[in-house]
Length: 52
Image (cartoon, rainbow, N blue to C red; front, top):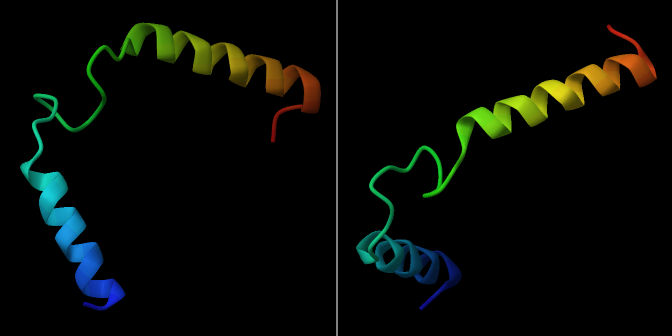
């Protein structure tokens, strides 16, 4: 079996595993907290290196 075939076998095996009810974000993902942290990071970067 070549590498491409092995990759396909792996992907098919992963497709059969139980997973989260949604694939957009992991279980337990806190959108509000993540958005807040991203906003804080954006503000800090703008302060440190300036806005484009």
